[in-house]
Image (tube, rainbow, N blue to C red):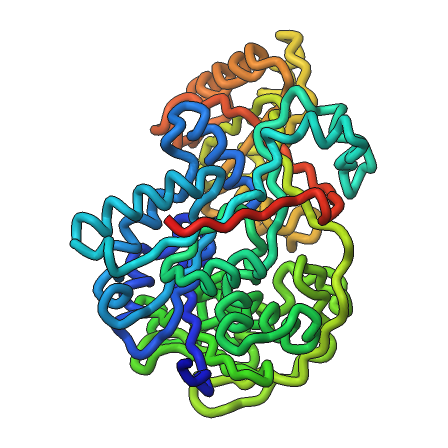
Length: 456
């Protein structure tokens, strides 16, 4: 039996679908790592993947992952680096098959085993669950999902770290999941390596905190960091984060030497408060973590020690992320130049609204923003100087009536010649009509969710 290591290194390789394509390779080439963690799935991503799968049954997963695996394959096949990723989206089996093709191409198929975690996708079971009394009420409005059932695109329960742990125990070197919690992707290697029990609440909570810190990639190592942002070095070569975990639940957040960015108490703290909610009850399928118990200490350059974390038993429910069709939208923009840029943009907005009203176009919502003046801060924005060089007028509408939204897109362009002067920025042509995908958060009894783990 192999000896349990004192430290394992879990490296953040992707913080979202669209993150830096070379980050995984840089993580395995920059220094020692034991695991690569790929986090691809935002809530809206599942609906995008479901649409792709509807068009092509072989799709529905994060395709960037296939190239990422190929880029790090020498480290996986020869050094034994393991991968944990939620790249499977709504089709983890197809994702595994695509990875298997890459392994075969490089003659590594007999050396690398793939674990597939499924069971999160509730779309095929939705009517069965509703009929059995699982109302999947919206956590904010308390409405039953039956009110939008005919428009549902995707429905996925958030699985925890246990199925990933099971896949690793079965010998998987690459684990592909569908919808899991972001934190589970880092937690699972830690609990697998150190053998943490299902009720070892403090250590499990530590694993969750470790996952939360690195789930957004370089956001905890200098990227998107507000504190003293001017002094953060070499963001062009920003280092992605690494967790050095220990059996007692303490861990170090760091990055490879020689890379840009910064790992500091400030950068880690900013990431900790990201999407935190109630700091005393950060609820996951594995454990409830108490963020108020977290202790941070400087452990040297680009090293932050995290310790003292407390946890408590989790709830009897899992969160379900539902996406459903909710009408159509279009957004049009024009840029007005100095002098009196904001005044011109405001007049253009009034003219546009009057024309829409005259045409009998009534929308569920129409929203105007003056980018450069108040789009970010709204009524809290400071007074705009009269000599502001340019302002972008951005107008968006939404409606269940696609034809009405389409007609709106034809009313922006005429302002170029028949509205206020000094307009530019219309080279992109008419706005596009887009379907709105809305988010429906719900809870479901854990006992009806059936995770499945396969080695392929």
